[in-house]
Image (cartoon, rainbow, N blue to C red; front, top):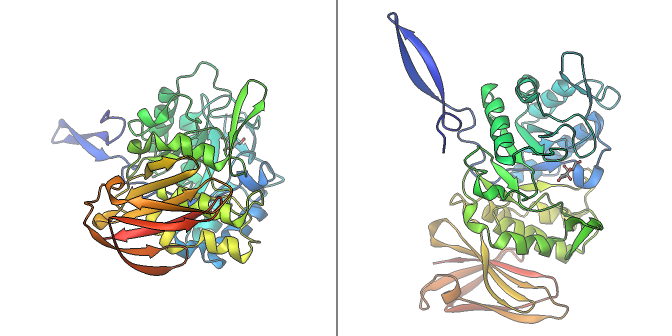
Length: 400
Ligand code: GLA
């Protein structure tokens, strides 16, 4: 870690005529100690963003109980920006955001929520709007003056830029504004951000191309341009990098598709369970103003959210696999484990989690609780076994 970049600002003080050097903690020092939770416009609305829609979503986050369940950041993704003025200041779309971004951030803050925005490290965003390149410090000051709490920073149109240097530069710019701002690195895993994201002050980093609202598979956007990812394809990419996540710095398997219509409720329950087990940022991506009860109940399952938000901050991983059948485990505070029995196949199967695969002594007796049935299942020793429906999970906690 480079102290001048991450931990502290060097402040120069004058004392009795001599100069003293003092270290001031960086404003971003204690951000995202558990994975950020919130909502983002992209998965459902793409470029169709406006202040009315974002306000409606913030209202719905409160009314639906999502705020109570821990969701906090309301993030506008691409397409809020249209140009730069002659001084280089970024300009929001005057038709879609007639009151300006500051007024919108104020509205979100009044609801007790936090406000996030999107830009790009290159010359243009992925949707072709003005990017941040060459304007990093100017944009950071503007965001801070608007009350931005979270910046998703994308990677389109970056030509020969170095990813690590570009994101370090933006983190330094954000810190220089004096405002604590979460930095969401959205570089799709190309330059392995899990290896350097923490050191440059990233709080989360995307690990793959964009999620698509489907259960499995990887698809090229067009021939030669890889790929968008279904849920299980992302899972496979996340497993091997589990050790890089921790408090303040998380692997980001992309935003949730829960409720967007492309999967069954069972598949959405699996998607949400896994994001919690992976200690992933839980950024909902559906229309919160119009959720069917089954979707609401998935997104607000507090026991599953508690797995994601466990203070130990460990990412879970796959501990056993046989064909379509898998066992995943996440160490929790207090010596507990979250365990998922997962069936990728097309017919119901019995799946067993063995203590020897969970780093538990075989003789250990634990209390088992099913987090979707919300039911205590009694004591178990040595193993836990259950039938699992196609594409479904059984998610339990084991407490010694
Ligand atoms: C990229 C990102 C997406 C979204 C779009 C916006 O594809 O990975 O999450 O932000 O850009 O254009």
